[in-house]
Length: 62
Image (cartoon, rainbow, N blue to C red; front, top):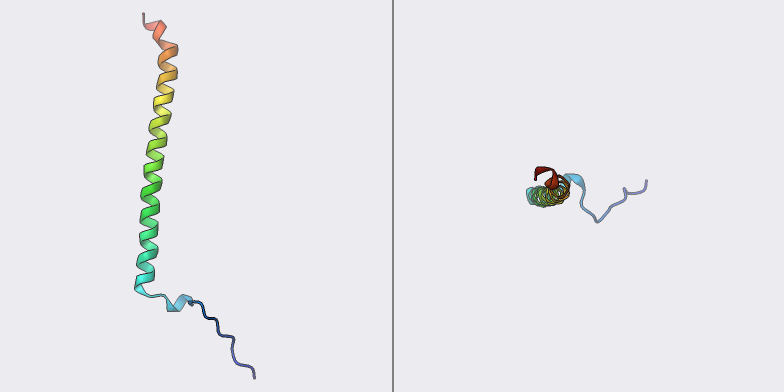
């Protein structure tokens, strides 16, 4: 009988509360960064769209 192979890496059962906490913090930071980036992108898109539509509809208002 050969012994079972032993790996030096962490097994899923060896995860501690600190690992889960850092995993959750990574998700929180990633979601905050994504929401900030999305809001900046939507804001810039609305500014550009407003400038284009404003220039095209401005002569109609006079």
